Length: 236
Ligand SMILES: NC(=O)C1=CN([C@@H]2O[C@H](COP(=O)(O)OP(=O)(O)OC[C@H]3O[C@@H](n4cnc5c(N)ncnc54)[C@H](OP(=O)(O)O)[C@@H]3O)[C@@H](O)[C@H]2O)C=CC1
Ligand SMILES: O=C(O)C1=N[C@H](C(=O)O)C[C@H](O)C1
Image (cartoon, rainbow, N blue to C red; front, side):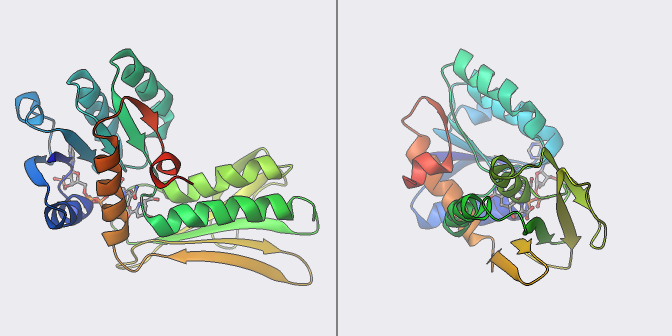
């Protein structure tokens, strides 16, 4: 496949390596506003850029008839708008807050656990994520996805980004975001009662799982029309 990489930073470079290992060709890579002439050389685009650029990058792909996979986080307030533009242009789109197989299995585990815990009101739930210090957004997209899957199984209305020792109000799930040197991505969900804690945790050891998942998603999407998720790609 001929691939365009939109955002040639830590993830863009890892994606390039994995794509080449899988015999794809990188026909365009950029860390700036898209040159549409260059973009049109590609059969599929993979966007891992920055929150302020993602919406424009993604919708430029729709308008140029290029299927697009995006892993950029921190722009999701415009997701529905992007979906509308995708459908108007008969485009192809996959967004995921996390493309790794392990995290997508963890998403399922999180939802199953939330369902189970919904009957036991003596437990309260809290989320923690840890990432490298260069990360621009907070909390992580993955933490937001995890929290939004838990909410329907609780009496809570919303989530709130809090400091480590801070409490959220009774109708909010607290989310703590820590920044530590070189951490690739750690997410944990803890249910606490006066008697005990139950905790599940995913730890990424490298960026390769995210990049491999994004390339697999691009391979899967390249001949399709519509808006999909990693559940479709992985058959979950
Ligand atoms: N969904 C997933 O599985 C994962 C998602 N992510 C997300 O992916 C995104 C990128 O992460 P990461 O690679 O670590 O970040 P980096 O900061 O390393 O890379 C982002 C790149 O985007 C470039 N950029 C800036 N403006 C534009 C633009 N208009 N168009 C295209 N590129 C642009 C930056 O250039 P410059 O440095 O010159 O500004 C930089 O090279 C983040 O939102 C992160 O949260 C990360 C890992 C996994
Ligand atoms: O910025 C990162 O590095 C990561 N971002 C994603 C997120 O915000 O969830 C996914 C992963 O945790 C790494």
